[in-house]
Amino acid sequence: MSQYLERGGGTMIKTQYKVNVIKDGALWFIQVPSHENIFTQAQNIDEIEPMTREVISLMLEIPEDSFDLEFSFASDKSPA
Image 1 (tube, rainbow, N blue to C red):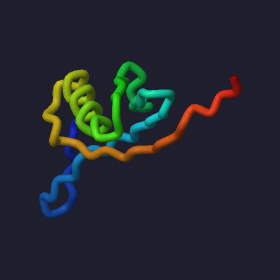
Image 2: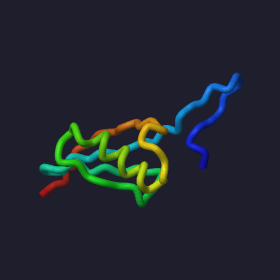
Image 3: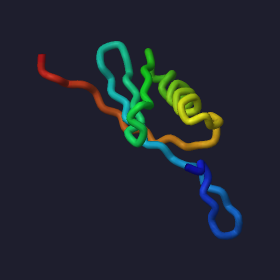
Image 4: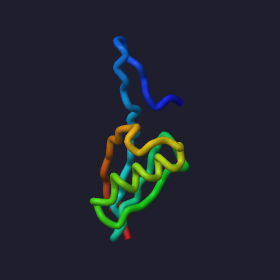
C-alpha cells in the first residue's frame, strides 16, 4: 500500500492511521485497528505518539514522519 496519495496538481497526502489508546492502571495500551499486529504500550501520555510512530514505522518499514495519526482515548473501567 502506498503511503502517499496523489491529488490532482501533484499534491501528496499522507496516510492517516487511527489509533486506539486505553489507560489501564499505570500504562497506556496502544493499538492500530487497521493492522491487528501493530500494538505497543507507553508509561505516560508523553510517550504515546513517539511509541506509536516507532511501532508503525518498524512494522510497516516506513519512515516515522511519512504518516499522520488520529488518536482515540478511553479508559478501562471494567467492573472489579
